[in-house]
Image 1 (cartoon, one colour):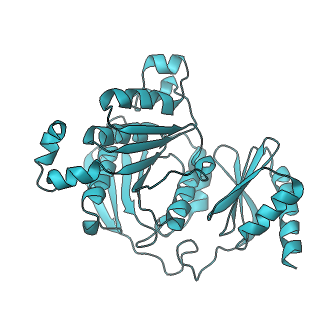
Image 2 (cartoon, rainbow, N blue to C red; image 1 turned 90 degrees about the vertical axis):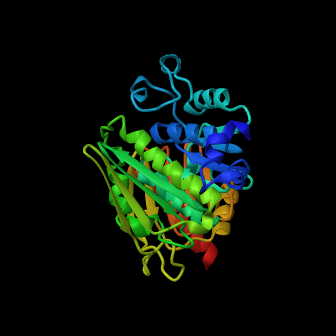
Image 3 (cartoon, rainbow, N blue to C red; image 1 turned 120 degrees about the vertical axis):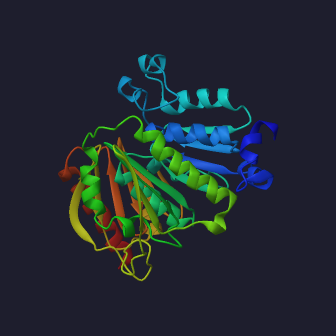
Length: 334
């Protein structure tokens, strides 16, 4: 415990709080600007285990704002999770680092063991929507954070207690479609936002009973300023209010990275699994979703009716798969 002497001396933490930190496991989705800063702070704080998920490799443009990475990492296009793990283990050999070079949508079906908290360090709202659904299903809190230009947002979210992401951002489809826009990021903004994210994370791990699940913190780095707003849970939220249901639509939306999505009526995951077995499609299933493959294409169908299509080039291709799926679901229901 000598290593953490200065942190133990903080009255709000103390020896008991430090012990809680050293027993915690945190899942970090996204290993870019926010993810690298937040992972480093958690490891230095003495966290027991960090799980990193990110599909990308290091590029030169990352170096301006993504700590843990070097020019050598960029030259060799090393996977971000691999480069980050190497640096983090040099900082603290006592912290266990587990890595997955894949999207969170792909990692949904992995067994992570007991998780205490998830950090949303992604850069698009489609990934955040999946995080929101995951945390709602498994009653897991997460710390939302985002950076753009000179402004950032941070909020502790517990979808089963306070507002979920859909409550906070009712127009998620519009935000997802704008996710492809390349925005500038002011270098000092990232540690400002990530430090706020980690501050909330450690506060939850040490004193969960003192957490507020309804406060959005807006951070401005030029000029320096901060505002806090209270956000209420929406009674008509189609995600976190079980009495509500997402409005089904045949409209196919295209999000960042050529990911297409459709909202159907609530789906029986077993029916989707039966559809996969009938067509001999490889699939994975858990309490939240079913994911299956068709050659190089992947479809993830969530129980609330959200369906994501990866590897498709056009909406016409998506429509063909969607028609086949809907026909099979209607047949099995009749």
